[in-house]
Image (cartoon, rainbow, N blue to C red; front, side, top):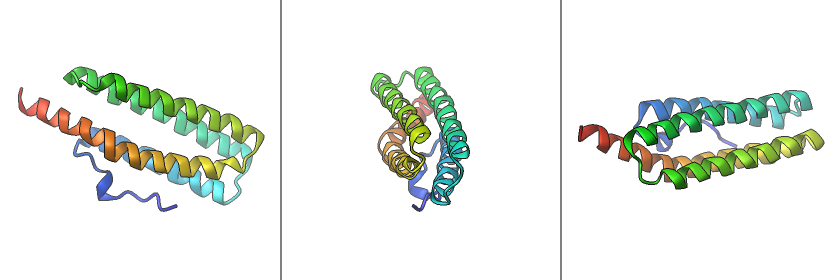
Length: 134
């Protein structure tokens, strides 16, 4: 899995992009730990850190949405809730079977790329337009 930051992940919003870089770094760290057969406790700890960071980032992003009156807030918020629920399930499955960590790292990376390119780029464009009209 090549979880290196790429230009295509940039939304154009410095705050969102900064937080995305941190998130992707955590996913990359988790993937490396999963592939190196890290101890289950270490995997759970990093997975929990990803969950907590995702929760923080989503709250941050959603506050930005509310600040600019983003019309697709409800849909975007539901996507965030769904990911947090899936993350919770993955973390619980790692407790039982640490081999699931590789599945989780691949899922997170694919989710990140798809969500960033499709949803967060739309949000960043809306924020930029709202900022330039004020």
